[in-house]
Structures are given as structure tokens and as C-alpha cells.
Image (cartoon, rainbow, N blue to C red; front, top):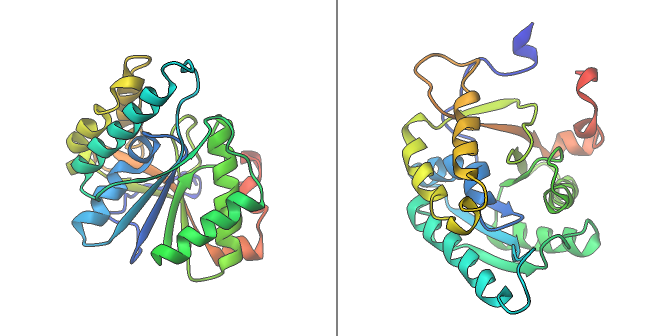
Length: 238
């Protein structure tokens, strides 16, 4: 049946006592899981956000420092709308986020430092190399931690095969306002409109009163430990 492939009911929250969001670039934390962040804050759950790269790809050497600062300020402004505080910036070079032990250990340290039991990261199906590398590193970090942490994979550039759809109907306007903060990106391409359309499309299988939703693959560390390669299986095996 269709409901074995995609949810036909939305959830109102993703369980967790402390959430840690990893964004490969300034804006992914809002585009991918801004609704979930607001839902956690609404329910009193602490949220920490780490922006991994500087987002400076394509900027000239003369304008690079200014561009990095602009993108950070955009994330800070969006954070004020979402209500979680201020993001941290690791400032990896854009398009140089590489899967490896260094990144895995940094993610592990961040999880332990924040006490997070729920980690958000882009899905392994994303097209951007930084998104993919960060996703694989976070999946491995959560796998190593064991059964105390869940991981929620979010979508930005490529739709994922979700096992959870989060109802953000009442939060869509605030998410739109937060996405509008990223002027440096939205002037290149209307990413804010694309994501709003994606969130609307995600209601395709949901009741009519759900007008916006975010899609996630929610996994427990135990599932990753038992079958770590299952996440990467092709759609035709589902």
C-alpha cells in the first residue's frame, strides 16, 4: 500500500529533549528544518544550531570576508525569528567539508557538549557535496554513540523518501519570514519560494487542513548500529 512508502498522517512534533541542528551552509538550518526548530522552541525543547561551512564559494578574495560576515548575519537574523538564540559557526571552507574522522569527532564532541538526544542533518540523498559529507559524518557519529540519540535527516536540494511528515501549517508564515533573511542567496535564486513550494507539496498525502509540512527520515541510533547500510539502499528495494 502507498502508506508503506510515505506517511498519510502528519506528526506535530519530533520527540527529543535537546535538539542539535547541523547546517552545511548558512540558510540550510532554516530551509531544511526551520519548522521543526520552531516546534521544539514552542514546546520548551532547547535547540542548538551549528553552521559548518562559511558559505563563501564563488566570492572573490577581495569580498570574501565581507560575504562570510553577511551570510552569518543572515543566519543570526533568521535565528531571531525562529527563536532559538544564536548559531555557532565552524567556518569550514565552502565545498571543502569532507567525510572523515576529524569531522566525525567534531560532531561527536558537539553532541556530547550539548547533551543532544536528537540530531538534525541534511539527508544522504542531497546533491551538494558538503551536504552529503556532513550527512554521512553525522550518521556515523550517531551510530557510534548508540541508542541514546536519534537522527532526523532533512531535505533541501533533493526530496528524500520520508518516514515522518511534520505539520508546520501554523508556522509557515514565520518560516517564510526567516527564509527571507537570506537576501544574499534569494537574489541569486528564489530558494525561499522553492522551499515554500516543497513544504506545500509535502501535504500531498495529508489531510486537507495540513497546508505545509517538512519531510524527515527519522532514525534511532540502534537502527544504524544494526544495519548501517540500509539507509543508503536504493528506492527500488523498499
